[in-house]
Image (cartoon, rainbow, N blue to C red):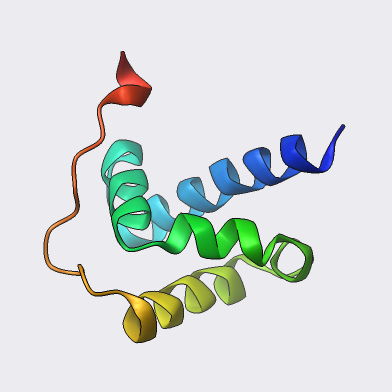
Length: 83
């Protein structure tokens, strides 16, 4: 597998564990992570994050959102994945 393929699979994994931890739908979790820039954070930090555990990943995402996001209140809806 290429690095890009691994990053995409890992992003999907992160969305799945985030939705479970936060009791969200997959679409809502993805929309929220995308709208806060956390998807870019996950991709940019793939090398370090993919070797850690679920709780560390969730804590890292939450910390990124807390310190870097300007749009935490209402996630932008992205329907491209469902088309």
